[in-house]
Length: 141
Image 1 (cartoon, helix red, strand yellow):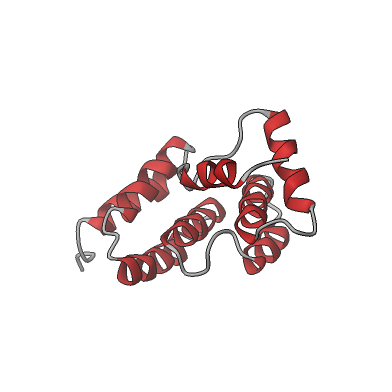
Image 2: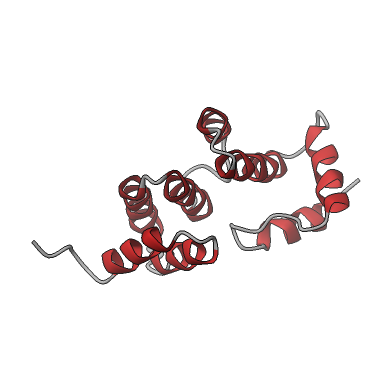
């Protein structure tokens, strides 16, 4: 069983983090499945599942999991995760829209660079380049 301190430590991890250790992930999954599990824990586990589904190209599963919530609603964490999933699907324009909303809501101007770096680490070079170009200002016509 996990403690509240353990959950807070999990939630302090970067939004893109997933447990590297299978045993650790299974312990969190078991805790999230409990009827009294806190919603933030359920959201983290849904995020792990949505990321795996996105990498497998199962966009129906991604949509269902995202609708259930991948972090606190309207948080920068959720916005970054949703934007990444859009990049993963190839919908970078949608990612830019989601990210723009998160920046406006939270004044988190670093989010575009964070997402671009995340995309780069995941091998999404085209998305990363487009996000970096967008972060520099409006597109030239």
